[in-house]
Image 1 (cartoon, helix red, strand yellow):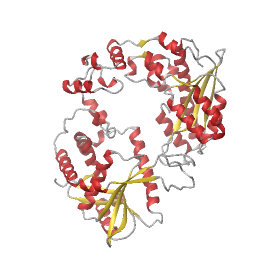
Image 2: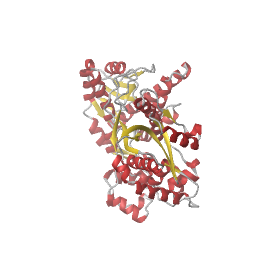
Image 3: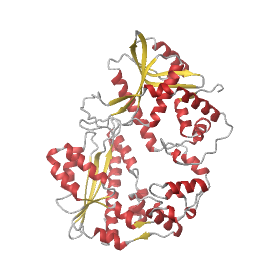
Image 4: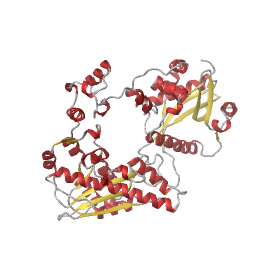
Length: 504
């Protein structure tokens, strides 16, 4: 295996894709982590911090930092700490060819002997298949380095747990014992380590065709690099929407198909056929009559609603749950019986839980009757139901609004498609295609241009170190973004329903 020692993360990269491992080692600068990946890393750090307080309530444990103190020093100090009786966090172990750092090591007594229990802490809400690989690697490296390991567990977040406030996070994590599977796979782990070193030793990157492994278990940070190496298709296959059936996947794999024109129609679903036809012809498809008929039963007044939400892996507001989508902002455009357009909005950047004030403002904004249009409306309906469950005094009014919500996404998906959508029916794909005017362009917005950016902006705005001027700038950007969503939503309704409308 030479002089190189591979970390657990490198071995897991090998498990996902040999090319990914090679690039991680030899071309790390080509890696581009997505915003989702960055958010996952951030959540992992937050959960790790909470785990230390939960597993070391008395504060007697030790935290190692190999980047600060050096790897060799961390391994040496781990050995010293294993002679004690206090919890250890980020304990380091090394064997020929591999190293690992355990999230939590807890001392236990077993038959009069001092042993240790390992806990791997995850920011997910359930144990995944790849977590078992993770635990097997950790356990093997620890045991092979001489650690008397009594057991291994994976701790995940309990998504049903409700934060009681006052920094009390007891009960947030739930453990699953994986001792048997982790210990039984030592031979497999040795094979992975040997295979990973074989890949790293290659002079050139392995030739691996892109596929499902590029996204599982995580989106690979080298996807853009690999995509750039592939021959440029005139009409790429990755715009085909929905799940690919087995026959389609087999055809693509067997023939190395890269062009839509080479895919037999018989292997495609109705939406996929529509995408293929539009892509090859370059012409949009629009069943105006069908869309108008679908919307004919919904009169005025009409409302157009969009939420912006935030979710925290570790709840910060009493009464909320991990990863709960909490609305902090809404925009509502409304259209009166006489076609008069009006607008109202809500945004709370004070840092406290905005839910109750938002619920009250939403009731006032949506009136008593008339359809409430949203896009991918299951999201809005879900948030309204959650608000109703939390605030019983407003439940009847909130649920009345929820019952009026109409989804425009199925209308778009069934009756409209433009080649520029590239297989997507998100509002950010449909709106610019159907309404190409600059005023409906998200790219023209300063700052916030999508939901992920809205979340980031919100977190920055409520942070203690954010200046007043910066907070006001974020306020303007968030209001502009959410307002465009509902202006655009009303314009989509106008085009689909056949009712001309000048949106202000």
